[in-house]
Image (cartoon, rainbow, N blue to C red; front, side):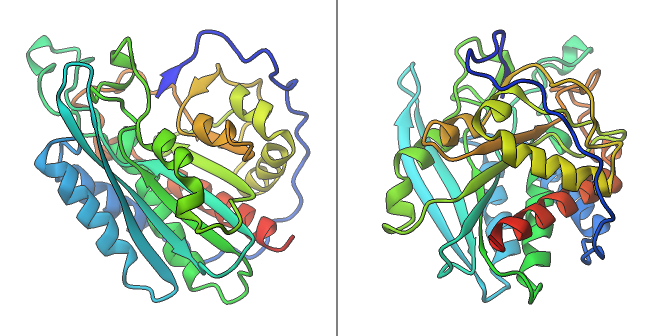
Length: 315
């Protein structure tokens, strides 16, 4: 992802956040299970395009999703060329909970990782793999555990598409370290969305997760999200503040950030990004490891998106 220098001209005004009411009974969202997903994914570092860990990460995600008969899993595979002619082979993973239901929420994240720790304070380690516990594995962990929870929730009335995007870190797998960065997986998904849905209903709303596991996680409304989905963001923050007001802060919006929510918003799908981009001094270094992560942070985000999806399913 990349922090954008200029906010969209049509950005909505700052969000007026409401005090949340009493939270409903918490579903059995297991923070330890989510943390274990991060540990297992970091073991197969790097997970960037073209590395052995990339295919192993795909297999891990698919294997974690296919135990439940209510979830169907598909691999959206394609190839494209990097500017230097290098072929890139990419795979989006699309897992659909209750695929026959028309009213759908998309919950997405990326699973590819930065290829090298180019921001490491030790110059000798800047060619070493970047573990990506937060910047890569954290969103995957939240979605895998949320999928498990919602698939066992009998009162959940709608459908959810859990989409694991490839190539979010760009064709060089350097994210913000690439001056010509652009996401690959989410634009491909957006360009072929009608084929993915077989002519059925597109998602009513999309929520994208990135970098959501650090201790003292602080999420702020993101300007592109405010422009795309102001009422949906307001509702998610209302739910989130009822769960953990320290995570879903009532502070001013963050700087605008280009991530996988942008391609979906361009289709007219109300699209939100949950991210804490303030990850100094570990951002894209060899120190982005599981010990920097918090199960409590993962759980707060997971509960919030679970309840948000439930509220939209009930409409």
